[in-house]
Image 1: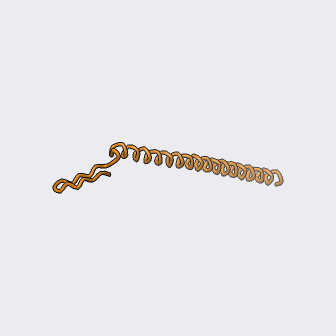
Image 2: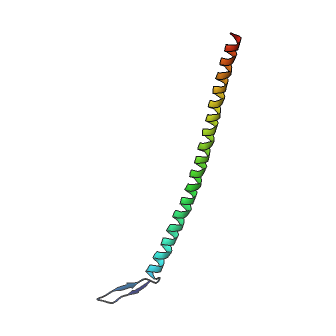
Image 3: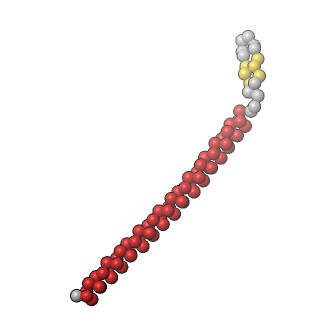
Length: 80
């Protein structure tokens, strides 16, 4: 950073161009946000996959319970 010690008008000039530095910071921020979004999307997909598996298991359990109930009713009807 260059600093001039003029008695009346002190001037401070940055050594790196400010727009270029701001651009690089924006690129870093956007890359970090994108990486976070990709990670969250993977977690959401995994969550929905597990949710679907749980749904299938519950439906299978309900189907089996219905079949068991029907079989016991048939046995009762046959035995009586």
